[in-house]
Image (cartoon, helix red, strand yellow):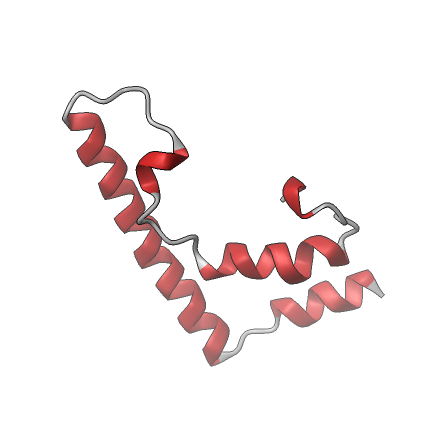
Length: 78
């Protein structure tokens, strides 16, 4: 059952391709934001410094669908 579900998630679709490409753009923006803060001399960064940064939708998808399908019942673990 779990293997079938994972294989279903891996099937390529146009929507998943768009999500994947958007995630790459978000990761680039996140890394640029981190680099900019590090260049200013801030070396002790926390998640509070990046409140404006959106979590990539694929990570949200993992928390909602894939994590529980793999047996990760506690949403804080993923």
